[in-house]
Length: 324
Image 1: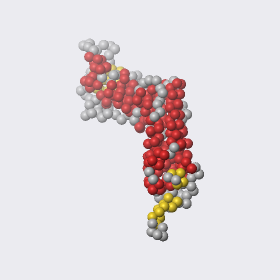
Image 2: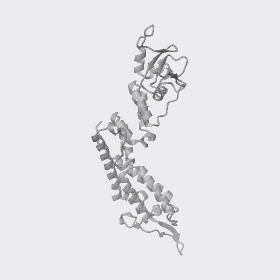
Image 3: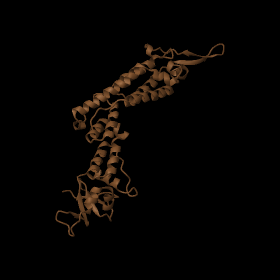
Image 4: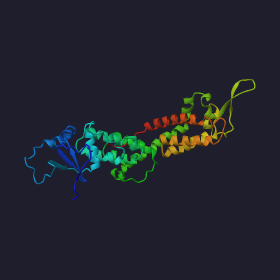
């Protein structure tokens, strides 16, 4: 058996009164008081009367009883830091899904309610959700974490409708997966409905003068000194549905809308809109159009914000039909 070694500070204190040994033989010298205050499990454990002389089954190291636990040193370190006062140990940052899951499982085991809450918050944090939404969904639903399941389901909209295999898929039933895919499909349909009626765009701008960049128009002064507008030389859109305020918009905007809605069918989320908007900005700048190229960056950012808002509103009306 590999000899155990002591953990680093603050879990090597000379005045500690018990040792917790991790599954990989790291010994944590800790104070019973801190653990008892954090957990009724430890409070009950430490209240059990101990014999005057240690039994043969009770290992003692440097005068302290050793309590083996099944958690590895990384998980135990995070768990204990949550238990200790902030003046002695900072709370750990749980930015990797597996770390958060390990702490969540341990917190539940040891009745550490406040730490369980922090682990749940970590699972639903953007840093984890954006990277592994499908894993988060499967784990959260298996653990009957309703709020985390719903947040994860929404984040899966940034993934293709038909997901690739992931290990945690075995944690959910076929009915659960079907519910998630149905939710995804309904969200895509709801967002695509924005294409059929673009009055949300004209309502936002109010008049053609507020969105000249979108119409490919520029201001000029005529020979009488009057200010007026003229169309740029960009090709005009072929679909009449993209006529705004009675003026046909440039072809590049029609392309943006059509391509974006196509992508939104598969990934109905803000990232899809933002990526398409940035792509359009770069392509329009390359046109060197006197009306469009100079104004497209600011204009598309404004339109992108509006588009994202409408996508979020459409998605928010769709319910995930899943039993908890």
